Length: 403
Figure 1: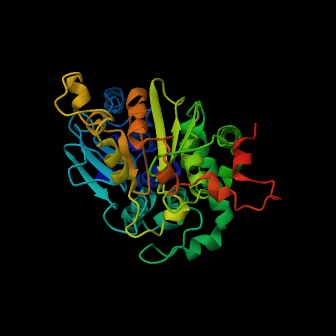
Figure 2: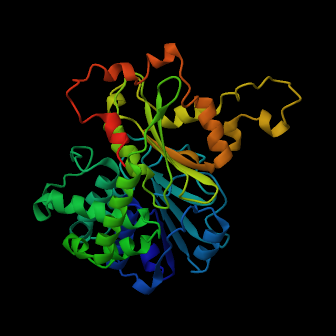
Figure 3: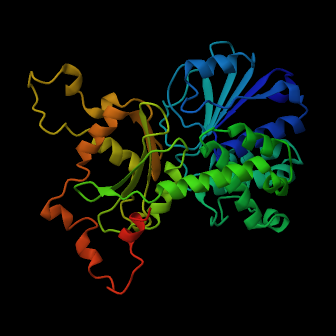
């Protein structure tokens, strides 16, 4: 057993409330089981990197771990987590097939078992039977991580565990405020994930997190950046299914803005809200997609991952098979050139990190901003705004035009 081996352990959690809470649950569990804190190391990935980046693999190896836990990082095939002999465990809930895991690793995933448990909830359920004090120590971390991914209005009903006792100890508002603060540092331009990790690992009381000056400062910084960027006006794909917002920020605010507009935009055709951030990583476009509220009850359900892949599989406009004027690489569908960082995550909350040229090609394939008389009738249009009371001054377009 890991805790009894008295060997080095490396935990590699994702940067958000779910991943950090799951990693903290693992750390608290190992400590409760008697493993010395000096044996437990955390490795927080650098901005824009994945666990498969050679630099990250080298840094993990430097701890000489016998055990490596990768939590909530998304699942994909690849080489072993490190080259040296080790035991690797992937705990995740993002969409994945049976082949989408590193070599020589074991995995536990919830992606195929709806309602899908978050990584924090999955880790909590794995660890809870291992020690009598685990539930009372880590129950709030389980809720923090789960609310971070599934929303703060989640109803804890079967098959999810009964958390009534936890909500008697800690108010829902308290735990939801913790979610907000823990998510803030990784969204800042400085990508200060460590401050959020330390805040979770150095306490067993969620109230202490609310007094953390660094987290409070980070949240204020992120809120100001969201407000600066959120007034970008959308352009729509020619089929009316995708609303595209383009921003430029060194902060990771694109998922927040996507979630915000997914709750406001409405159209019979709309299936995806896509927010593209051209300032987050050099020469890259980071984008986040969400299913708008108006499309969440559609039958069949909207699948963002499949939608993105379908658009990326279309031929480039003007391409004719066999035309020698096109270079060989341009004959390949865009999907084959986008790489492993495209269309990752969940079917209702996906996105990607792609090169600028490939992203512009994706926009052309979607025909973003292209309007035809027929297609305008299927997408949000000016004709629909004419029905608004002319005395109403607080309009959507007025909001976009705010300075």
